[in-house]
Structures are given as structure tokens and as C-alpha cells.
Image (cartoon, rainbow, N blue to C red):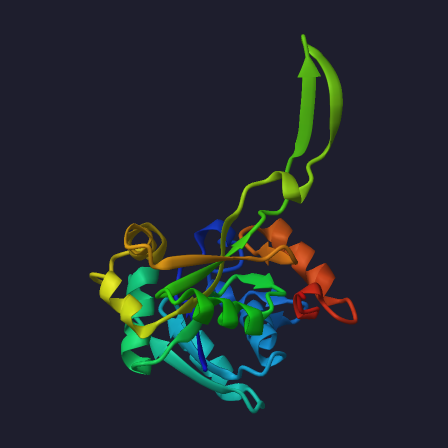
Length: 235
């Protein structure tokens, strides 16, 4: 089974790192986050990747060519200005009539991919999204008549569920994407919801995006552990 990795965006929110390379090539403990994402899948027996490139895609292609690995990796040029929906549609056209995993090139999680796939197959819908709790970024404050009664760290479980970016999609999902300029999140997923064709697999384990330098530093520290949390597969 193949994995689509969206790796063509500009990465403007972490522009300090993306002047000369695409965001998925930003290094986490000496290796691109793209490598860490692939390692999540490879550790669970999935080693066939289609990387949707765009902005500075040649950097990714050159890096792939330099790898010494048994992984099968295809860098597919999906255009400089193509949006996420358009990139997925181009990849699905390239792959053909089969279901695939898909994810973004800037987030790590210890999703149990076998359970995710089985959930998708049992649901019998066209697409499954992994729902996660967002990282707790702010302290929580409670007050009564102007008096602060509690202040402390916000628990991650206090937050709602959001799109965690680890998908399983059937090939026909491409029919929900009209053109290159559509974002997958704001168009195809909305249409799938309207047709009752989108399932949510709830993942309560580790999940962390890399949208800021602070988050990059957090991931770099975790990558130094003997087993990074994204490789400790969730039950």
C-alpha cells in the first residue's frame, strides 16, 4: 500500500527555515522531518511513498536520490502553486485504482496504521481522517467575581478534536477535487462530509505538528530519545 506525503507548500509560518528548502526538508535532529514521517510508516511495514513536491521540489528529489534505503520513493512534481487538494488528486491519478494512506509533510504521530486501515475498511466510506487532540499551548485560567481561583497548564484532553493529517483515502476521492487550486481541507473534505463519506479515527496518542521554530525545537529534543514518541506505536 502506498503513502502520499504532501511536500510542496511554502512553509511560510516557519520561513526562517524555508528560504532555501521546502518545509518537509527542515531538519529534526539532523534528518528532514520528511524522513521521520516515512520512518513512522516504515516501522509498521509500509515502505512505498509518493512525495508530492512543489516549492523547491528539486531539493527533495536530490535528497531522495542520495538515500541508501530499501524504501520505494517517487518524487512527483505536482506544481509550484497547486493546493493540497490538487496535489492529492494528481497523486491519485498517478497511483491508479487503489486505496492509499496520505499525510502532510510537517507532522509526526504514533498512529497505529494497521488499526487505522482496518477502521477505514470496516466503515466502508471513501475517506478516513485521523482525529487528534491539539497540543496544549496556553495555561488555563478560572476566576470567580474577578478573583483568580485556578491557573495552571491546560490539559491536552481539555481541547476538542481536530484534523491530525493521517488519512486513508479511496481512489475515487479524486472526484471530490475539482482543480489544482482547491485545498483538500476546505473543499474535498467538506463535500465528503456532505455525502456522508468521511470517517473519523480517534487517536489519543502522540501527535505534534511543526508550524513554528519552537515546535521544531520540541521535536528535535524528542528525536534525541532512544525511541522517539512517534515510533512508540499506539495501542
